Length: 105
Image 1 (cartoon, rainbow, N blue to C red):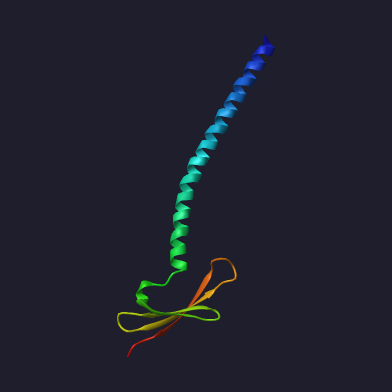
Image 2: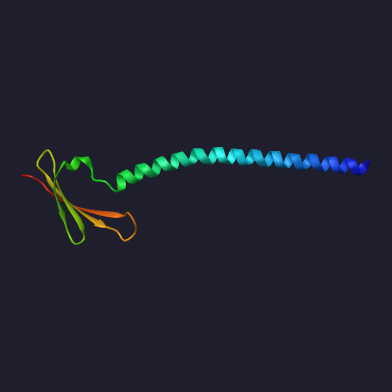
């Protein structure tokens, strides 16, 4: 009789452990997925601002290929000319921007 009681108690205990484990797994998946969406949005916003030219630079007036990368010429509404050198990085996808501003007098 005591042996059956211990066996039943052990199987109830195992069932409790399995149920609690599954609940923790489900909660982790739900919480992890919601954090993934937020981090992806932050990453996309950062990517848009890191490798981009500000719209205030104006219209693209010309493009020239150089030994280091590419040179872009922009002209703003007020006549300001900006010369942007885009230098390709060693690691995949990294760009470095150098800007020279020539104000129109």
